[in-house]
Amino acid sequence: MYNFHKMKQDLFQAPDYYNLDELLTEEHKLIRNSARDWVKKSVSPIIEEYAQKAKFPDQLIKGLADIGAFGSYIPEEYGGAGLDHISYGLLMQEIERGDSGIRSTASVQSSLVMFPIWKYGSEDQKKKYLPKLASGEFMGCFGLTEPDHGSNPSDMITNFKDMGDHFLLNGAKLWISNSPFADIAIVWAKNEKGRIHGLIIERDMEGFSAPETHNKWSLRASSTGELIFNNVKVPKENLLPNKSGLGAPLGCLDSARYGISWGAIGAAMDCYDTALRYSKERIQFGKPIAGFQLQQKKLAEMITEITKAQLLAWRLGMLKNADKATSAQISMAKRNNVEMAIKIARESRQILGAMGITGDYSIMRHMMNLESVITYEGTHDIHLLITGLDITGLNAFK
Image (cartoon, rainbow, N blue to C red; front, side):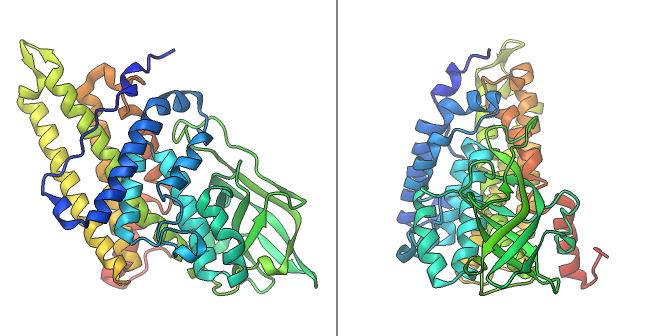
């Protein structure tokens, strides 16, 4: 069994090379610092153990709710915190600094469950579900990806039929974060005309099951599963009435991808901070390895890339606050910042040498987690093609 004592004291110091704190309001800093303190106290001491056990630490749900991580931008009348998008980004950054899997839980709850109910749901649906989701009493998941339809969700086969007084839902979804313990699922399915709609599915509906996915090397402290629908009777009032078509789930993904563009910075900052501290303490050839040119090159490039990503995310947050951020801009930030983080995780691991692969440090866990983050909410390649389509006007998907 690995020795986790080093992680119990979280010494993290956030890099801010361009004094970006000066761009934040006092409220932004208060929200970020409370999240940072919570991660140090509640996540860091246990996360290596839970990742080793491949178990989700469900005792963290209440803390996530308490720091406003569930639907932070949802209006207060529905139980949200009514915060802006910079605040949401900062929360995701701090939580992912702890672990990408824990941030996934918060991202799904906020952007993929609460967001569609808030944006596309009826007033009754908002009042019924949003306050309980904001408090963590209810947990949710989002069913879009299918076993045979990932990057191309428009070809989904999950479908529902109008049976007069209810809908009948059949199909399956795969790679669904939170599904094994979720109370509700926002499920995207085609009606008899082939139009995509969102349905709110509750755990106790007959014919609905959510088996857990095992043997993951990545997001091991996150709970992942399937959604299986075998003639599930869905009340008609559970249809999200205010938007249909593929644009509806893609709008949710925009919100989630935005959060990831901030979250990945947190993982990168944690790896950089760990590598910088280690390099000053590790003595080889009679001096700290931080004094050698090759290690300084790695560290200097890391802080440069983190700083660029911080500026990109901050500007994107300002655009989102003004309701001006485009889907293509969000794609660029998600792709760039996750790639930045995964490169920094790999370089940081090299600075730590063999120690970098152990659970005494966070780096290898971040590296494995980021292999999922670079694929989910739109793969690395798909985001490149979204940018390509935006700048050329030519569609490379078909």
